[in-house]
Image (cartoon, rainbow, N blue to C red; front, side, top):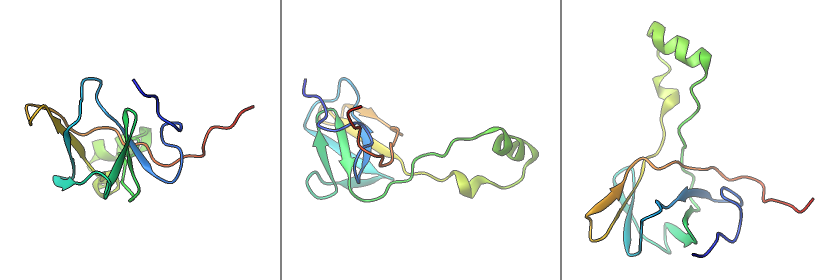
Length: 109
């Protein structure tokens, strides 16, 4: 298995880990819209790298949970993109995969 050439989430791209049993060829969808390898994303080991911004699901802390419980509308703040993958001729799939935003590359200490 090839390791990623950079740390997960590093660089100027958004990263999504491929499921352990996902094998090429596979189809990638963002919010239900098909995406094309080499145009919309690239494969880097066991990671998909997207150069266009993706919204990852924000963390729901105590304050937001309290507001949601009280029925105060914070729902717009919770929007995120959904990345889905289909492989094995569409027989296997994974939905709502975690999106890692860009981060600083790892440096040697």
